[in-house]
Length: 348
Image (cartoon, rainbow, N blue to C red; front, side, top):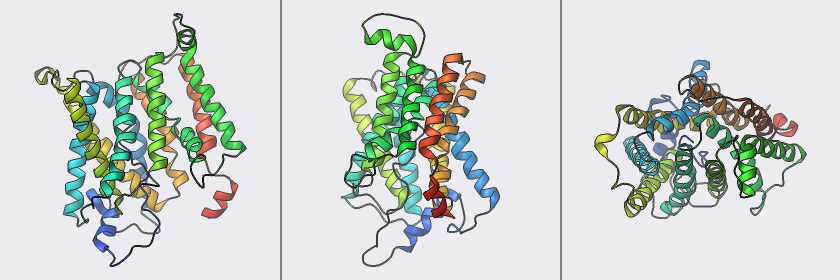
């Protein structure tokens, strides 16, 4: 998971007191993505560039994680990534005139930071020690399925329809294909070869559920009005929590800074600058100018990019089981993500 926002859309509520034009202006032009507030018809070239960032950059972050954890332990790596990205984004927001967060906003930031980044991003990074980056991206692609299930359990939640249920069934079937005989044997206490590592697979599933829970609960916790500042808070909260945890567990103290390779440092810098800042900024802007269902297509484009990059650049093996699992899983995600007839009529 490249650091994505829990719910980057600005909450639909009326602001009390004086309006904050500087905060609203920053939403569209932060980090130079655009130079003016989002227009009704944004330039086609800008749309192409933004989608390219979300599709290609986020899809490549899984391979970036694999390189970064070659010589940096997973959780210290995530701590460094989130702290660096959080500080940069916070400074950029303040430089653009965004109001500083109130104390109550940090409560929501901690909830989102723990679920989305400590557990979500952290477990994905840990699991990539045991599972190929392309396969990891395929499991993470099932996040919309878990969001549908969890959203139905909250007050006022909408129960999934037939198409969504069919998508859920396909997505879970794809995971079973990916798990293969090794996971079934592990369930019975036996040993078998073939399929994804069951422990790594379990960690990835837990990461997707945590990410989905953070996305759903993000609608109910207090957070900053500006989506970028709210994300910066989540990154800072997650980075500080992981810094404390890795210090207490000894992971940070055991890190041999001199043994960290140049390619791991470059991968970490790429994850901070491109994955957490550029990709996220493009995602937030796209949600403001195109239908969310169109933006959500990243959920089944990212795995294709990650699988291709892992196979071509990382030497990861794409066997028949992985390809079959990808086809079944992504078909399920498409059923869940694509808008229904009623939603399509509403966007016309």
